[in-house]
Structure formats: C-alpha cells, structure tokens
Image 1 (cartoon, rainbow, N blue to C red):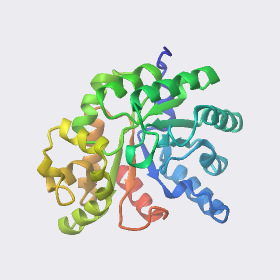
Image 2 (image 1 turned 180 degrees about the horizontal axis):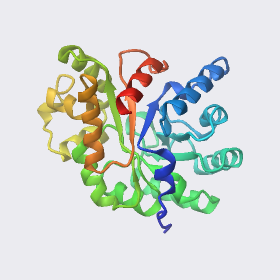
Image 3 (image 1 turned 45 degrees about the vertical axis):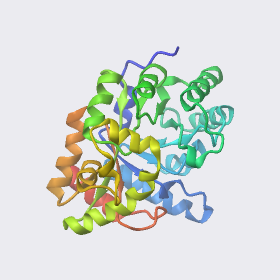
Image 4 (image 1 turned 30 degrees about the vertical axis):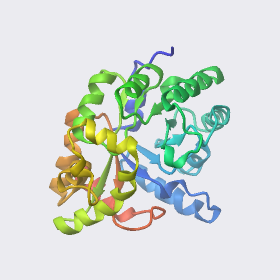
Length: 293
C-alpha cells in the first residue's frame, strides 16, 4: 500500500478554485492557439487548476501546460477502461519530464453504459493502481473520482485524494470524514449564471439528463437522502438546487462556499449555459473569477 502524501503540496498547487472543462481537452490542432490563450487567461484570473473532462489523458494537458507557468492541469476523469495503466504511466512520465509537478492524473471507473468491459470496477481500479505503483507513478500525483465509501477509502490510502463529480455538500462532508484531514478533496460543481429560477432549472435539467441514466450517480443521490421521486422528470427542484449553483453573484458565491464549509479544499467549477461542451465560456469564467475575488 502506498501512503497518501502528508505535506499538502497538491493542495497548495491547485488552490481553492479551478475550472472544469471538456472544451479545453480538444485534440483539434487548429484549436491549440485558442486553448493556449484560454489557459493563460485562466491562470491570470487566479484559478489554480484546470480539470479536463471527457476521459482525458496526459497528452491533452500539454497545450495548457506549455502556455502557462503555475496552472495545475488534471484529468477528470481518465477512464481506466479506455486507457491502460502502462500507457497512462508513460503519458504521465512524458508530461512530468516537460512540466514537473504540474500535472495530476485523475482516474475513475466510468460507467457500464460507456465501457463494454465494465466488470468488478473496484477490483479493477485496485489492480490499475498496483500497475501505476510498479511503473513509478507517485500516489501524490493521482486522484480518484470517488463517490462511494469504499472508493473514497481507496482515494485516501492509494492516492492524493478525491475529485468527486456531481455531488452535494452533504456528500462532501461525508467524503471529508472518510478521507481525513490531509488528502485533497476537490468536488466538481456546475455553475449557471442565471437569476430566473425557471430558466436556470431548465438549463440544469438539460445538463443533468444524461447523468440520471447512470446508476453510479443515481445510487449516490439515493445514499444521500434523495428519493426515487427526486430523479424523475429531469430531477426535482430539490435535487437541482443541491448539485448546481445558480442565481445572482452573491447566491453563487454562497453556494460555492457551502462546499468549502462542508470540507472541500478546492472546488472545480463547470459552467452550464446550454452551449456546446466544446465551447470555451471565457466571459463566464471572467464573471466567476470576479465574484470569487
């Protein structure tokens, strides 16, 4: 077993707030300049980290790391079924050699719907971590997208912490209890810059729809006090308001702070505006940085 890091270096590296984005992982060569420019601005705005959605790999971090000097870049998440451990270790070594200390390997088991080989996910994740250990990928530079108690325990014992996706402050508080004080806890939180309740919740339901078909998420909601009725018709208002931050700037800041108060070290903020996941909502990122100042 590999001990979790004790010096807090990763917490200092990622800071209190970061941006979660699928658009920043683009493999289109024509977009490299756009990605580099956006990453440089995020660093200037004061975000400590960028988290790449869409089962990203180490190579997707390179354009962002090359364009910045302090920004941490992590995968959120890299599916263990899509990328084998040997390839992940090689990618980590390449990026670490070019940009020491700035890349974080975020891993997860994804979902049966997206991986034909999905079997015994917990055991598969343990075996994957064993291979990463053998390949020399340090535990203090990897995080697990942990939702349930067993995987959170694994994040505590075999990684630097957890990057849970689509969770509530109540989940964050429970995760903190399981992880203990030292490991990084960096939940993702969706942000809607909309003050009208109807419009905000309509946008939220459009974003949430795919996740309500995935048992890993729905089971987690049920573990934390929601009912089957909360999962119907795109999600109840209670569920929407628990997993999205929406409203005016004061309300959004208060919601983000609720996760911090519950035990989050870092909050990865994902803008939801009804646009393409490939888009870079840079004006929204600027507005959020202002409300966090």
